[in-house]
Length: 260
Image (cartoon, rainbow, N blue to C red):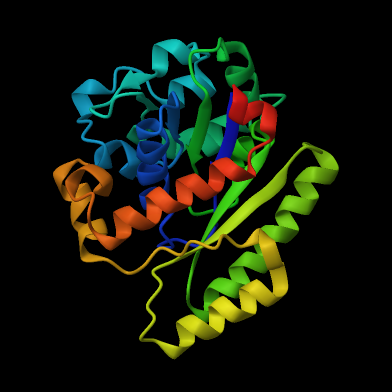
């Protein structure tokens, strides 16, 4: 199972929107997809139409209570897409994890034990912080997908995130790498957007995806209907962008993973 964390410690950059729509696009391409909602706000779960009553087990149970992965995963309305939802209890997990001896490896152990071939790829929607929840995600995965809003302050946040990745590589997970940075909320009418894009590409080169995610009203509307934008309006510019991003992401996976 390919494991990718969608992370950026800055809020409002499009992490959850990217997680939901990338998971849907990959499922539509024939992949068996697992999405883990690791954000206490639970927006990925709500955005896929799950109400609180349906969340019998959650990512909190996976981390804290040792409930098996298969029991925590719930089938969504999207064929081929399962989710481990988040509940409000997850907001206290940062404190509870401190009590565990291997507090940074709880998610990795759960995924290792539950990787039975049921899913081809696992996406993890991380909270907007660099706490123990995000650290667990980075230890558990091979790759990071970093959504980056096209504004000046986002560049400072990216620098901090890359430094954190290097520390995690050195101490916890040598296999961790940044698969790609995706520019979100892209507005061609705004000169700052173009400037940020040019600066990021000059700094990171091919790490930045060619596909950009535009500012799009339909992307914003879709979660209120409990649907990914690709189902809510598959013809809008945002949906088309995520379909292209999914294609580009697949080309960056190792050949053995794509073949599988």
